[in-house]
Length: 181
Image (tube, rainbow, N blue to C red; front, side, top):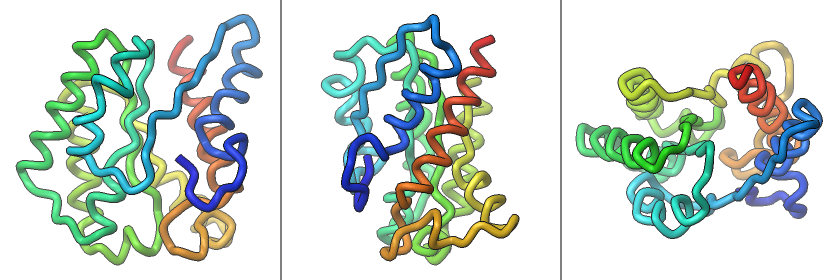
């Protein structure tokens, strides 16, 4: 993932990998970025076998929800069932799972349904006892603390800037490192 970011080294998965390697210098860290720009929850799940399970990961970070609301979708009970089924499938593959919610961005906020999607993600994490990394809260708190939104979100009002990805990647690595202790 990393629309508008010209170097893969600037995407949050790569920033996270470097930060985890720094924090856990004795560990072997490999990150496979199977994200697809514009993908939705049903499309993610349809790709699990090929793009996730084929790699036999120890940890899966499932970034979900943004495209499902940013392009006018309405989260409903069917989508909630899909999220739960997706999490259960990931867990059945013997991976630890962390759900990463939506970015705090103008297109997400304008959707009018971001809070419903946020609730679905939070409820799924609690119900299935998997990790939750709230990118939404991290970005919102950063902006409320005085970071300019344009420092975190690109001109399209949706995707992260290189600085936004850097912030997310480092924070996610720290959260993973802390929980792995």
